[in-house]
Amino acid sequence: MRSIHLLILAIIFGLFACQPHRDKLTPELQKVIDHYSQSPADSLKLRAAYFLIGNMDVHYTVDSKELRNFYSFIDSVYTIEKPIYWYDSIYKDYLSTHPTIDLKTYPDKDYIKAEYLIKNIDQAFEYHNTPWTKHLTFDQFCEFVLPYRIDDEIIEPWRDLFKKKYQNCFSKADFDTLSAIQACTKLNNKLKVLKNKIHYNPTYIMGMKPSTLANIKFGNCKDYNNLGVYTMRSLGIPIAIDRIPSGHSWNVVLTPTGALDFMAAEQNPGEHLVQYKLWHRIPKVHRQTFFINRQNLVFLCGNEKIPPVFRDPCYIDVTKEYFKGADIEVAILNKSSNNNHYLYLSDFERTAFRIVDWAKIENNKALFINMGDSIIYFPVYYSQVGIKHAAYPILIKKNGTVQEILKPDTKNVENMVLNRKFHINYGWTSFLKRAIGGIFQGANKSDFSDAKNIYHIEKLPEFRMNTLHLSGKSYRYIRYLAPDSSNCNMAEIEVYERGNQTPLKGKILGTDGCFKDSRNCTKVNVFDGNLLTYFDAPKPNGAWVGLDLRTKKNIQTIKYITRNDDNGVRAGEVYELLYMGLDGWISMGIQTAKADSIIFNNVPRNAVYLLKDLTKGKEEQIFTYELGKQVWW
Image 1: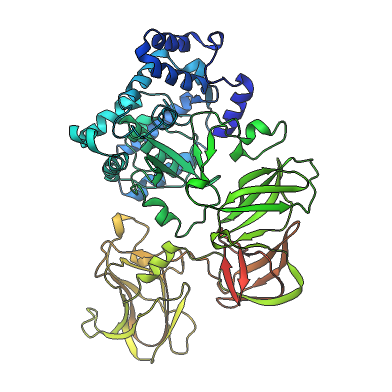
Image 2: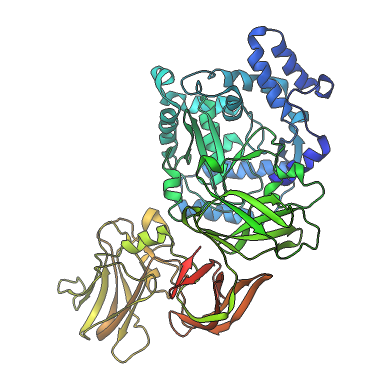
């Protein structure tokens, strides 16, 4: 929504030069210029005022009575002490009953009052040339400390609010001696004590109002990014927001050696991307700016339709600050039917193509600079009805040293054995590790005083139903005794009697309660037949879950799966395999799985593949097939 509003405002109001002419200023903005023109001592503040006003045309405030009602709801929710799951549930309920609300847009050039802008400039300059900002150029100070807003939020005196709330975490000596990194870390540790929860639900606006964020208990990545900016800048710490186009965003603090990533209220400087990159690949990085970057596509495209992600005039490409990527020259094979002048690279994230970069088409080619590695890119055209493929996918391998064009070889085919439709990321692997040391026990006394160990999990289990073949002894009670530091985290257990293919039923036993009092993660989940539900015990140590089978049963088989994403192939579910051709996905047929893997025959080699579960599930990930295994991208 933000980018669309910005494009409209840019067209309607035009663009200021860096120092706007007097006859273009509103009376309120003229008051600001006049205020700082009276004294030579205010020359830097006058330059700062010109910077803000000169880039104001594409900034705006979103407001309405309905939006104010939404804020009242959020503010009231933040005052209530409830378990974490409650906040997410009630927020979803509100969005379901208010899917849209009326919003009104107020351009800042007509909306901002002189008193507010002057106070903002004066408060920012309290920290000019302090130990936290003395390494900044004046332009950097204007970008990382000075701006009076972040997105489309309602204007409030946020510097007063956040300074009053957090300045006491610094001593007078801290203000004189701490570096920007040290100050950012100390203040972020203070933010970490908030009861925070990241959620991925949509909201009506890009920027929550500052007074609401000050009491945040749940929000999306953008909310926490903005919280970090308000908090840090109110005390003069130079902060910005970086993002993957159409993807994740985070904070950066500007140090004497460059920008360093962190996540407000979560990870301190230098910690965020170390963890994030364990399971995510980064194609490009953009930095949100206050100034208008006239080299952005929105100013170059003329009347050509461009993707929403590139309609924002206020960002710069900072990829080179993070890594040296690969240059990709695309030779166009499919001509555009719309006379497109620009080509795009898209990656594939979860279920959809995600446009991440653009380049001008020249001599039927397009050159993309400094692209992230370990990614498959799809060269595409953009139109209002969607994307059209312009060439075969391009695989950039580790460190950008190898580029492969993935053109399907229809004359050289193979049979594929497929186990999953989505990769196993680092987070899920950590749950698998929690099972190491777990023990399955059988007993005939309800207190398990006569318990016998019937299986000990000594190595990492499979990320699917694991089958244990037992000696066939008889027990009335069966349980899983979880290792320490695991919170149990068992998703499903099935117990089979000799000669019976149907799991046994019984009374569910085990540790009562669940982690953080969540009502959704109790022991009953282990026997509900749903692989996505799991038992998350209230304490990390000593948890167990089991069955009272009522009478002794000759136990021959136990099947189990730990906390998981249910993206493995499952018997009885219907799957379709596709590969990417020059004009899009080509189907290799539909079939029903008979086991926890599925075979597709005569599949062209050297292609990009996608396995879809037509029975259920949303997560899908592209892969290549190498040496008989799926390789995820």
